[in-house]
Image (cartoon, rainbow, N blue to C red; front, side, top):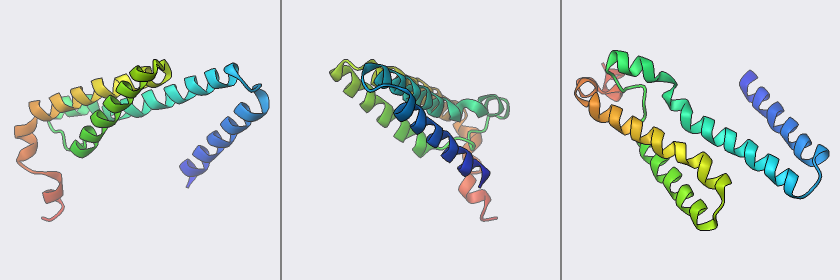
Length: 126
């Protein structure tokens, strides 16, 4: 509940900042683009926070394979779209999504034999 309220407060403060304090035009769009870019990059990097634990244990059960596939498809499509528009506010923040997905695919490949011994969905049915 506190996290939801905190996120709502951040969104409300952002809305006030962009609508009340910044004049309409290029400055507002520039600040909004930068803010969205920061949030997008942090979203793509967040699954790698468990990277040290995954490498130490050799177990990729903390990572979601379907999310990794969706991330690479989504980030690649946004990068291609941004390149067509020559819009770096689209290209730059979505590029880390491609790289982080490739890192996660490597981890799935590297530690596949360890994780296949006990898939996470079967461990709950014991």
